[in-house]
Amino acid sequence: MWRQRVNFRLLNSLLTCSTNHFNCCRLLSGKFVHKLKERGLITSHFPDKDDVHFIISKPQTFYAGFDPTSDSLHIGNLLVLMNLLHCAREGHRVICVIGDASARVGDPSDKLKERPFLDKSIAVQNASNISSDINKIFSNHYKYFWKNTEHSKQSIADPLIISNENWYDSKNLIDFLVNIGRHISVNQMLTRTYIKMRINEEKRIPLSEFFYQAIQAYDWFYLFHKYGCRFQIGGNDQQGNIFTGYELIRKLSKDKERIPCYGLLIPLLTEETGGKISKSSSSVDVVWLNRKKMSSFSFYQYFINLPDVKLETYLKLFTFYTKDEIDSILRKHFKLPDSRHAQKKIAETVTLLVHGEEGLREAQTTTKALFESDIISFGKLNDRTLDEIFGSDLLTTMFLEPEETSIVDVMVKATKCNEMDAVKLVEQGAVRLNVKKITSAGHLINDEDILENRTTLMTIGKRRKYVIKWA
Image (tube, rainbow, N blue to C red; front, side, top):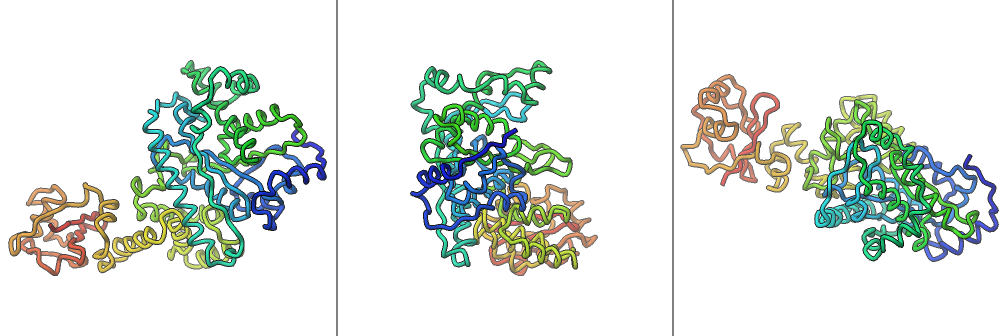
């Protein structure tokens, strides 16, 4: 139903006029959308017109929105950013819209209950954090995956990161309703499954959430006219909102046949149970991108622990390896699955992209220290890394009294157990200080028990680990 006949001569002149200011010397591939689909980065695009491959053979502008409802992006947002990075690598311009205005309204998409209120000051602070995270990811990409590679002779543009508060601050509500609102159908909104469910269950739907589609639609309309942005990228759950923007551009354009715009839909990452992975996921820990919310070690470990069934998918989604390189990685992995070769390749790439060289080094050092008994590496970890990994529950600061502080004193303070239980565990051979098994409850802490960074790693049994920081 979407197919239209296209005047390619007219289209060529139109696109040349709108894009000759950007990357005009770069030779681009008309098969870019097909390449994204092959990697699984997008599942579909609309409308299904014959001109998409021709249009994309010239420099275009792509955008995606990020609502600052939290102070950090998560792994689902990273999939959006991977699409934008591939766009930039292909020679296109990328816009990241931080929706600090729309976040306060609340996106009802796939939500069966009303969004909680978001204070403006919190939205502004969250927006600042998210903007910094996006900048860091694009900077890391250039530094580690573009510069000094075979691609580096080609130019790659920095993303334009802008807040939609910029164009709503001075917007008059009545003018917006008259000029924009009358072109957006409430009938379409009422057909959304989540809206029907709320109505059927008599759950409240605030007027503000109905406005959200109009706001996201206007974002695209604004970007189209100011920056010539013809492509919006978003999750499958955003299809309704993206379509509303497409329709708004089409309806308000003077010559509708001359306005080729597209929505690119990306897959939703799912849990083992099939539910969507997001910041509101309840059955799994959220994989945050900001290290204040999740240490680089925990981030790295998420990918190290991927099941084999997800390896090919994640190699395509979250790395820049070619098809041949991915095939080679998988062949080597499945010859010796216990080596976790593919998991390590994914973890290294994504941690380097999100946390940089220092974050990757800390993650690998901590992994060696905790899981490969590399106690020398553990002794090089700094306070920040230790705090991020162990937190206040597993990290205890103690004053060392020479020839007085015993292993039992340490256990009582660190684990909150009583002296009798501590003695029993030691005499059973269940306690290690660093790599040394302690079997005497009378053992006194000495210089040999203290690592280079003034810590001691105490292990009880096979898995329980505690860190003692000596003051």
